[in-house]
Image (cartoon, rainbow over all chains, first blue to last red; front, side):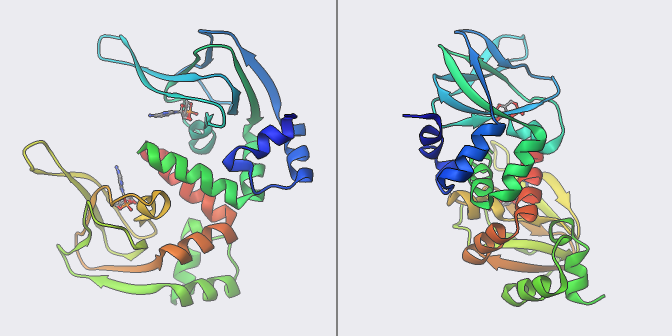
Length: 133
Length: 133
Ligand SMILES: Nc1ncnc2c1ncn2[C@@H]1O[C@@H]2COP(=O)(O)O[C@H]2[C@H]1O
Ligand SMILES: Nc1ncnc2c1ncn2[C@@H]1O[C@@H]2COP(=O)(O)O[C@H]2[C@H]1O
């Protein structure tokens, strides 16, 4: 499966046609992570929105004694890093690659452009965030 | 100030022109609430999204002993009831009128239509929800 077909298979991008997907792919940057590598560090400024193309990530936080707690895990087709893109606040939680991980990422400006141009995708993001509350 | 001007003053609707605002107002239903009246009951099916036009509301939950806790208060221009519209889940918290309250509401279908037609507003909703996390 080529990359635009893989994007199309993700609910958030499913209403986009070939041409739109190719355009989106062009502004996305591929980033690979090794098992255990930190993708997002809590407390940092956010610069990217990530779509998980392959592998599993863990969302992590720390308890009162600083011990790591796994909040959740997510697999291919999920996305993360949208919160600080939207609010301008610091990253809320740590995101770590569980095994080998492939992502495609959008910077803040491209993420906003994408949401404004694709209301169905914006609603998918809205729904996913709402479920985290 | 007439009602469409009042809507225009709300950030979420500020990018809409006169004609769009008039169209939106037509599908919104005005609902008034008396001091202390429950607008949204936690655990119920959600049917409406509310925009607060006048007055103050309280977001409420209960502690382990069932004692009421005020999570937050919100004034004119804020909105609530979007979560269950988006996720299809039950209402998460109780919303109560603190004094006299005027709202304009959209039913589920009109809310979705509105978000799809107005990506800037969808991003305002996204940002507001993100801040609650
Ligand atoms: N429970 C959670 N709270 C906050 N962020 C979460 C949670 N679960 C997953 N995440 C994701 O982890 C990301 C960390 O960076 P952001 O705060 O930009 O955006 C966050 C969300 O995409
Ligand atoms: N901390 C909060 N958690 C959940 N909902 C909240 C919170 N603060 C305000 N609300 C609003 O209260 C509403 C109750 O109905 P909904 O769950 O549909 O949508 C909810 C939000 O709009």
